[in-house]
Length: 545
Image 1 (cartoon, helix red, strand yellow):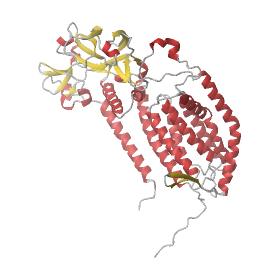
Image 2 (cartoon, one colour; image 1 turned 45 degrees about the vertical axis):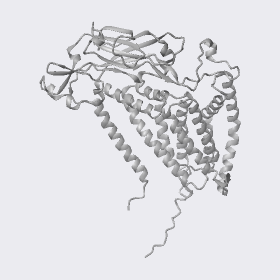
Image 3 (cartoon, helix red, strand yellow; image 1 turned 180 degrees about the vertical axis):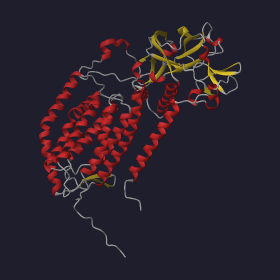
Image 4 (spheres, one colour; image 1 turned 60 degrees about the horizontal axis):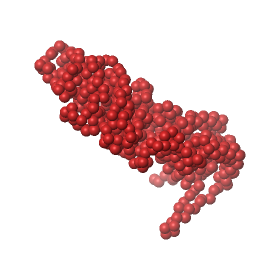
């Protein structure tokens, strides 16, 4: 007979360990590429090795063209926007040029950039050893709704330049200009083994036969992760020129392979329905973070997923078995439900990343289910008409409810004036997209700023009962680990400032609960969270011979 332990928890931990080990192995395979051993032995021909053409130190030239066509065969209908003579692959640079915007692009069309790396003094289409890559300079995205003062109706756009207002619907994607183009060339003199060429790099390679040896031409790469939403500009019909910042830097083979995999991952997210803004949040994690800190973030994020799962599991298990509300603040449960739903609606209104929105939505559903359990609600159907019924409370539960009501009475004297005052202040001084947006923001600012006050009823109940044995400590522990992890993500993932500050507020909340646990040690004569006493001996069924 297997021990009666939580098999689901063991399975989750086991899968997590396998996932971490597999991820480490894959990452090692990405950053460490096996070189061609025959080249190290000094063989020069027919050894199956693919050597770098850059080792010959050719004189190169970088040319950037724009066109409205996705493929070009000749020099017709293209515009040269940047030409770098005597291009040095080891030297980084950044240049800003003005690009002419064709009428087709101004009418919600697409403009492409063709980047050629070719021999100096030779046109790209006359050079057999040129390499090129293409990238769209435009993308389609729903513009951010304009914010106005709800009392005066005045908007920022009206204050600055009302005559340039566009006549597009706010819910339709429009063409945006990518104002940055980041280029890289892999500069390592790395000799590849032709029999085990990495598939990720292979699609960026172009090989030529020089005598008896095979060489690969310079590997040109466009860093799409550097294309951020903050750099996008709406293309107006009256705009004839737009700025384009072209930056270049060399890149190592390991980082190149890692960047290719990350770009593929972002592309996959977009195929699964992630918007440009959602994908931008993921890009920010890679681009704006130090590489070593990024590795730490990946490792910590894996633990975050594990603790999220275990916290949800233990929380649901606790409330599923919960038969009594003795020692539990019903008002605190109702407040957590209300605040969680408001936070979810706020994040939805702010078009926050799905990385933050999806866990918030799951948490809101769980909190609604907890309210049903706390109030002992049952729904009975009389035909098509539902009838909600509430269960009766015991004397001990009524005593807990009395403490709860007493705490809320004192709390309301502080909380309500603060929330109402904050809502009036924001209405007078801050611009919003709509009245709904103001209402949600007012609620959520009250939740974030004063939400910690709603832990006071539960603390007051704990104080009156001199016990914390009725609290779900397993779920609290996992949530505490995630709270400290959220402190790290608060500086990495883009989110509203109020939501970021709430992450640190939760640290204080948990520390107060820990203090009460130390202050009120477990009394085994008291009932635990399942309505049982440790001193009660479980009744055994008579053994049948």
